[in-house]
Length: 344
Ligand SMILES: C[S@@+](CC[C@H](N)C(=O)[O-])C[C@H]1O[C@@H](n2cnc3c(N)ncnc32)[C@H](O)[C@@H]1O
Image 1 (cartoon, helix red, strand yellow):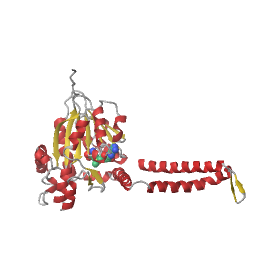
Image 2: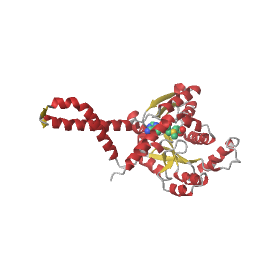
Image 3: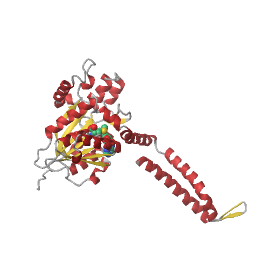
Image 4: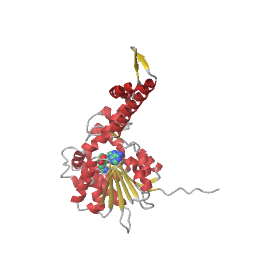
C-alpha cells in the first residue's frame, strides 16, 4: 500500500513537473509553421501529452533508483504481502509439532514471569498473528489488545478468541507496530508481547523503545521472541546439508523464511539484549526455544513423543550453552530503574 502510494506520488510529481514545463512554454506564444499557438490551444492538447510524458518521467525515475533500493522495496512488498495472503498457511504451521513447540515453550516461559497483581492485567500483543498467544493469556483472565497490520491475521485471531469463549477480553486493532508510539497512551500495559515480529520491522529498536513507553511501571514485563542467527548456522548444515549457507549464516543479517519464502532478519546473541538496554529495558531472563527438536532423526515421532521433547527443550532452553544455538531466543524484560546521578 505504502509502496503503491510512493509510485503514485512519483506519477503525480512527474505530471506536475511536466504541466509546469508546458505552462512555462505556453506563457510565451510560439510561432510554428507560421501559426501562432495560443496557450489555451496547447492546454486543450495538454492532457494526453502530459499523461504520456508523466509516465515516461515516472519510468525514468524508477530506472534511476539504485538497484539495492529496488531490492529493499521488493523485499518490503513481499514482507507486507506474505502476511496478507499467508494467514491460513501460518495458522496451519502453528498446528504442526514445530509450531506448537514454539508456542508452548514461549508460553511456559512467559507464565513463569507474569506479574502478580490484584487488579486485572492488560496485555498488548504486537504482531499478534492468528492470536494463539493472546487467547492463552485471555484464558488466564488477562485483557489483551491485539495489534497487527494484516486484516486476515486479525480475522483468524477474532475467530480463535470467539471459539475459545474469551472474545470479551480481546480488543483488535489493525495498525503498524512501527507507529506504536502514536497508537497508545503511555504506561497502559502490564505485559507486552513482541513475538516473531521484529524480524519483519524496519526499526526493531524503535519498536522496543515505544514498547517501553507504553509499559506500566515498575511491575510490567516485555516478552520478545526472535530468530536466532546461530540457530540458522546449525539448521543449514544439519537439516539441509548446505555448508556454504551454514558458513554464510555465521555473519548474515538476513535469513530465508522457509514457510513463505523471502527474507527474515536474524538476531545475533548479543544484539537483542543491547537493543533492550538501549530501550531502557532490563533483561530478567533469556531462554532458548527449540534447541534440538528440529534435528531429531525420523525414528523419534514428533507427535507421539511431544511431551518428552517439550520437557527436554524446557531444560535445554534454560541453559545458556544450549540456548545460544536454539532456533529462537526469548527475552523477558522489565523497565530499567532510572539511573540515579550523583550531584557533585
Ligand atoms: C511471524 S508472524 C508472528 C505472529 C505471532 N506473534 C506468533 O508468534 O505466532 C508475524 C506477524 O507480525 C505481523 N506484522 C508484520 N509486520 C508488522 C507491522 N509493521 N506492524 C504490525 N504487525 C506486523 C504480521 O502481519 C504477522 O501477523
